[in-house]
Image (cartoon, rainbow over all chains, first blue to last red; front, side):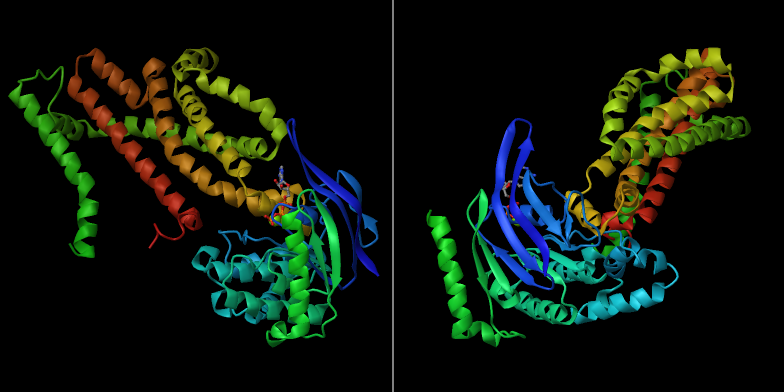
Length: 261
Length: 258
Ligand SMILES: Nc1ncnc2c1ncn2[C@@H]1O[C@H](COP(=O)(O)OP(=O)(O)OP(=O)(O)O)[C@@H](O)[C@H]1O
Ligand SMILES: [Mg+2]
């Protein structure tokens, strides 16, 4: 069943007289519980797609539909994580992670009285990303990778039906990144939310996604939708298997075409 | 130098600088034989200070409470207006030019008007202190709100937060360091405001004391008043710094508070 649907969506940024056509014609059909990855050259409009789907930007033309409803303003309860962690420096890690609970219903109503229950839940989540000892530290007392892990926890804590990840692993070292792929996949296998991941890392895209969308250079269009039918759970070892490597090469070739064009 | 001695020296530095300043002043007065009416020696000022301590304290108290009251009103009003201006581009567009114009008016000019309206006494001093310290608070609070990272707002919006919630969860905490930074500037301005008012047309306070002592050619008392204002100014400044460090530890990344 379709959960996120983009039909011929375009977006033009306007700043005074200056206009930038960022996204030309994006058509995507993301099923409920599907995990997709979006790859493409820098500046092709990937972050723009994220903002369109969540309703943070209104589409210039075309139709964006999420869960059967047309998106015209910010939709509620989405989990979002950007490349920079955007944690609040005045909140401890655990309070940062709990932020969605203070906003998203029905948690908001219950939060005050059932605080202990929510804290326990946040602690469990922090444990899966190896941060249990840092719950009471402030973001600026954490390393960049730790901040990014807390950021993921914040995006996941309220078990959103839709998770939007914009290069959340980009700033991490290779080891932490690959470790978090595993964490992400495990969480997805358990909760089966709908996920959209923007990334520059093709191995990451193939490891995590059911479908990888390749975009053209700016103004962005979807030039390829590659279904990844590798069995789950995928492991780091499977990223070196021929079937996996072939897909990565196929995607890489397609992106090279874009760069050459 | 060990850490400990370095810390002691750092603490002692301002006192030593002040001592040097006073000694040079004292020596200059003696060497150049300056008449007391032009520049009294610090020791003489100190003697007057001790001798007239009761009247100084009474007048200090007048100045202090009018200043602090005006300052407190400025904080409340400044935060409210700052939040409105920072949170709404429309209010910003409407009020900001007005605020600039208002701030450009020399505050000495309003004291006579105030006296027509409310008469002499404590009220003009309170109002002048308030009006003069209002502006930096408004501007700083508004700046704090207006410079929130857009991504932070995006995260909250996509969770479904209302504008009020965004204001409460990010806007206010984010504006706090800006507010407390402005208080240091504002309290000093508030003293200027109340003393101006007392000098231009008051019947109380340190400003009035200095003016009347000056009229009697009593330079030591005038200078004693000056010292009293300086001491109150520094003390209130210190209070503001203390409050700032307490309230916004995160903005200093924990460094200044150890
Ligand atoms: N706020 C904005 N105002 C004007 N132009 C913008 C704005 N944001 C993005 N753009 C333009 O839109 C285009 C697409 O931007 P977008 O951020 O979506 O790219 P991206 O695919 O996420 O790139 P990257 O991979 O480097 O993050 C870019 O060419 C950029 O110049
Ligand atoms: Mg981007």
